[in-house]
Length: 336
Ligand code: PHE
Image (cartoon, rainbow, N blue to C red; front, side, top):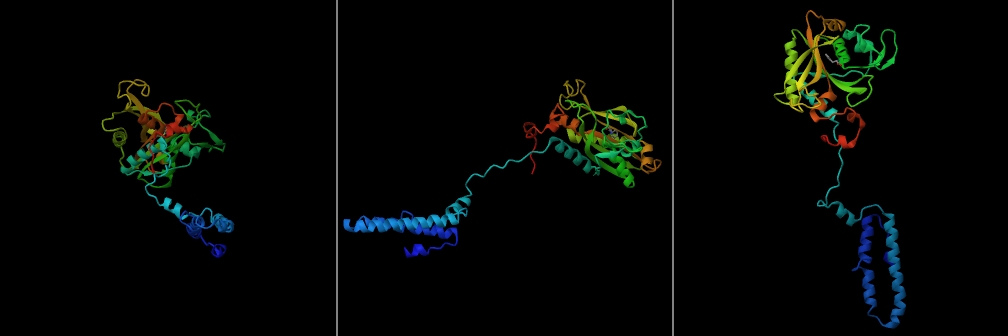
C-alpha cells in the first residue's frame, strides 16, 4: 500500500512497469488473492475487505497514471510499431497529365539537338503577338472573333496570346543570333468549346536562327523529331501554306499513327494528319527584332500539343484534357 501510494510515474514505461508488478495475472494482486483462498473463514472476513481495498487502490492508481500519459506509446505499441513484417499502408500517387508527359517528351527530343527552352507571358501585347510577326493591320487573325482582348491601348492592345510565336519575338529582341530554342506554353483563342476546339490549348514553338540556315535544315530537323516521337518509319509530307511570319510557309503532315493509313476518323480516312505549321522566318520579322536579315536566316515551327497527344494516345475529345476526370487522368504514367 505504501509503495502504491508513493508511486509517481515520470513516463509511460513507469506506468507499464507498475502494471506488470501489480496487475497482470502473475502480479502481486493476483498472488494475494491466491493466498487468500488458503486462509480460514474467520480471517477471510477481515482480509477480504482489506484485499479488495488494496486491489481497488492499485487499479485506481494505474488508471490515473495511465490517463496522465495517454497517447504516449506503451512498450507494447512500440513493439508493434517496429514490426517490419506488417503490410505497409497504401499511398495513393497521382499521375502526370498527358499534356505534361507529351510536352516533356517533345522538349527532350529537341534538347538533344541543342535547343534551349524559353518561355514568355500569356498576356501579351499586339506588338509581340501580331505586329512584329508581320501581321498586316487588317489581318483577320486580329479580329475579335479569335482573340481575347484584355485591354485597349493606343496601337498596342493587350490580349491573351493566340500562339507561342510571340515568344520568338521576345527571344530575338533580347539577344543576338544564333538562336536555337523551343518554347512550350498555353495559348488562347475565342472559339466555341467542342470535341475538336477549345478556347485554350498548348503549343510548342521552335526557332533556329543562324548564318546559312536553310529549308533543308528545317525538313531534316522535323523529320528527325517525328521519328523520335512516333517511331522509326513514320512518314512526313510538307504542303505549301501561308503564315505572315514565315516565307515560304508549310504545314507538315505525318502518316496516321493510329490506323497506319487504313482509315480512321482521326486522319479522316486520308492516312495523313497535320501536326504543325512551319517555314523560313520572314526577313521582315528578323528586322523587326533588330536582326540583320542579310546575314542571318532561320526556320520556325509551331505545333499543338493536344493534337500530338491525341495521336499518341488515341484521344478524340479535347475537353477531356481540362475536365479533370480522374477516370481519364489516372490512366497515365505516375512519376515520382
Ligand atoms: N503560330 C502558328 C499557329 O499558331 C504556327 C507556326 C509557328 C507556323 C511557327 C509557322 C512558324 O498556327
